[in-house]
Structure formats: C-alpha cells, structure tokens
Image (cartoon, rainbow, N blue to C red; front, side, top):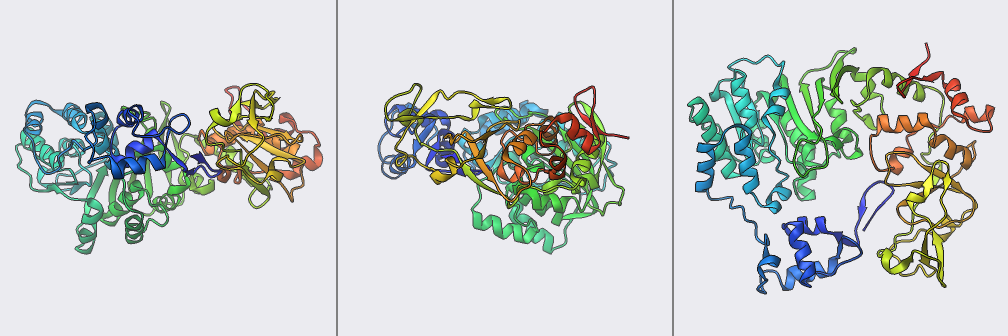
Length: 542
C-alpha cells in the first residue's frame, strides 16, 4: 500500500486498521490473528490481501478459533433487542454519561462501521447558543444517537412534541425516548428507527420540513458506491459522496426557508477536494458560525468542527463568525469563495485573508499542466529490499526525512539495484533526469530540493520535473521553501500531506525572477508589497 500524489491510498496490501474495518473486528483481533498464524504480515503494520481473503473464506466461521483470535469476530451489538442494560442506563444515568456508557457498550466493529461518536452536551449547547427559538419550531436530529441534541433543544424552549429524530440503532432510539420521558414527562412517538438518507426522500416529496436540523452525522459510514452516487444525485451533492455531504444534502432538502442547520463534522470537510461540491452548495447559503472544538472524541485524531447555516441567500457583504484557537473573528463569505477549491479556511483571520488575496492578485502562473510528477520507489517491504549500510549490489536512496530546506542529507539507506520486485517504480528516466525537484510527502512544511545528481528516492518523497516555465527548477525550489509560500500553504490547505493537487494551486510569480536571478525573501516580499509582522505572520503594506 502507498499514497499517490493526490493523497489517495493505492492498496496492494492492507493496513491492520483497514483489515479490522473490512472484517468488522478490532485491530487487537487482527494482531491476534497474525500472532496465531491466520494472517500473513506484510512489512510493518500490514497484512496481505491474499491471507485475509483466505482466512475469511476458509477459516472464519468454519474452524474453531481460540478465545483471543475469535474476540469480536461477530458483532457484539444486537440491533433488534432492547436490552435490560439500556433500560438500566436510561433510568440511572443522565446527560453525557448515558451516551458515554452506551457508546462504551458497543463493539469496536459496530462503531467503526457506522461511524458512531456521540456528541458531548457542552458542544451541543454551544452550537445552539444565540439562536432564537420558539416553542412551535419543528426540530429534527437525523442521527439522534443518545439524544443530546434533542434534550438541549427542548431545554432551549422547543416543545417536546415538536422534536423529531431518526437513528438506525433501535437501542439508541429507545434510550432517547426514555430520556425525554424521564426529563420532561412526555412520551414521544416522533423518534423512530430509520435511515435518514432513505427517510428524507418521502419527507421531501410530502413537503414535510423543519425549522431547525442539528446533528452529528456518521463520519465515514460504509455505504455502497452506487448507493452514494444515487443519493448524491437526489440531494444535489455533486461529486461529494462522503456520508457527511449526503446527510447535509438530505438535510437541506427538508429544511424550511430561513431554517437553521447545524452540523458537527470532521475538519477534512473544510479543506479536502472530496467535499468541494458540497462546500460550493453550502456557500450559496448564509453562513452564521464556524467553530473548532479540537479533538472532541476519544480515539479520534481528527478535530471536530461545527458549521451553523441559515437556509437563505446571503447578502453581498455577508460575514461569518469564526472561532478557532481561542480567538473569535469575522470573515467575509467572499474570502472563502475566492480560495482555491472553495476551501473554508476559517483558521485564518480576515487580515491574513487579505494577504492571500494579494498573493493571488499579482500576475502569476501555477504548476497545473507544467510539470511531470512521480512517486518515490515503493518497495512493498523496506526491510527486505533496503539496508542501513553500503553493500554489494545496493545503491543509495533518499528518504523524505533526508530533504531539508538547507540541503539534502547524505543517504543512510541503500536499495537493491534490481527494482523488478518492487511494488511500484516510476519510469527510471524520471529519477535519472538531469534536473528534478524532490520533496517530502508527509509534512506540514513545504520542503524541496533541486537534484541534478540523478538521486533515487523512496516513497516518503515525491518528485516533479517542471517544464514550459520561465524560471529554473532551483528558483522554484527556493520559492516553495520560502517563509511566505509556506505560510500561504498552511493558511489555505492546513494539511500534513503535501499533495500534488495543492501544489498545483500555489501562485508562482515568474515576473519576480525576471528581475531577480537569485531568490531572497526580502526582495520577494517587497515585490509583492507584503511585510512580515512581529508575531510571525504577514500583512499587506498600506
């Protein structure tokens, strides 16, 4: 397995995490199956697809496994039985505690498969704050889970009989209804078992709409691609096929005009190409708030971020309240629309967005259609094909960590000359080009080096060979290593992977190099009429 230039995973084997999700078991179980010989390890942290297929076809469910190997092979969560434990939780816990206790009772496989992470009440309360509600508002949570959004909506003033919800988990629906009955004395029939992506279609046809829709949709729920494409067409999601986009499109379809939509979503929604079409649709509405809650869920590395939207056409001078890094500021909606790929970079304040506009307003070109690209060599098993010291039959090869802004470290890795057994190798003439740019792939900083010694690279580095440009490869490397371009990259893309698609969007001001053979930060900023501030950021000169 390796990552291509666009950040997509190309699989020849499976990571342990992918194997766990494929078989609906925990990663601990996969490791146990490796230890007991059922699965064949593949490099560090991988298993072969062949051994997994063989195991699932010929062993799982047929051969009696030992207790450790068999742990979580079957989904421990019973969807069809409302257990005594759920009743106990509803009667003895309240607030976040009931959701946490219930979530902890689910198997890892079920939570991973369905993308379940229940929202803490503190986040729900913050998402609902400063929204004027009326008791007769109709409120919907399409994925109600343990009911925190509904509970807080009722506390905010919405009548219990006007609160609606769906969830595919019968136990979660029962628990939510029990909580409402216990806390407000209302035996609701408006919350029921159902998949909102299916339920929204008849609701839309019957013109049943809601004043407020707030939810934490499933993150990465497993749905067949054909079903995703069908639902994306129905709900106007374009090419945004992730479940977050599908649930947002479905929610818009049953949201009243001037109604309020609140979504708690993963940070990738705001800057990854996958969500671009849904971002464009979202920006035809009135954006009210964008909030970063940091790493809100145990076991998830990704940040949780919220968007609050009014279903109405925005004014031409519309601004959005942004909260990020303990700072609150406003951004113009237009500043988001002007970004490459309509990235909603609300981690960047209004003054910084002016600098971004300036960088793109000065005449420039980009790498789009002006470079050849290639991955570093993918061996499939570095331990087998690489050595840490020079040996006969081996040649030096550089890793991403060898590339620095100040130069290239001496190679400490050596690869077998015969590349025929490697998983993926670009045409050799790419590596042996007279001049090429090599750069780190996994990094939050742009780190480029102009190589004219035909050096080899492993796939922790990538390469590009520019052409039809009025600057040299060395000048391009200096530009991409500069403080201002690194600042720009972080302020727009905010990623830890250097993707080809992002690099192709960076502005390259070739006219600067017509006047300056050697790059310097000082003369470049002067050319752009931008200055560095004392706090390390930049601003447009008055």
